[in-house]
Image 1 (cartoon, one colour):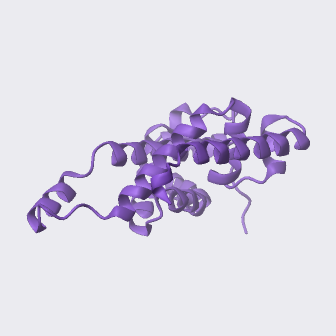
Image 2 (cartoon, rainbow, N blue to C red; image 1 turned 180 degrees about the vertical axis):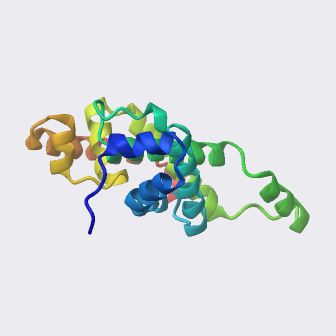
Length: 189
């Protein structure tokens, strides 16, 4: 297996529009991006589309990558996460025009699937609750649950002791659970 080219060189080549450089970037990170996309979107077709969109975005913003500020994997996952959050927000704020048209044509009296509405509501509530957490707790949860990093890796990324990271995760999850209990109404049993 040939040795990988350093991140900054690869991204310089991507920024110059070298087709094989974009292919190398895709080969390195597409599985990781897909894993995160499927966790966020829970639909294979949407996740595959998101992967393509992310790599187009990476190609268009390759000149912004600075290897002194972050590792390439961190930069790719941050861009991926932002893209997926934007995609979820757009989806929850306004449904696709086609979906509205199809729904209205089929039967104007039939409500949308309740399970889809509940899932969208839960996702929205989760993101809102995450935003209310202290920065350390939110960062640890995002990196460990949504980006797939181990707590040891998060500890190294944040330059924080492993025990502090574990405590932040525990406190953050506890606060999310408490928030979930407060948001539940007695009618939802």
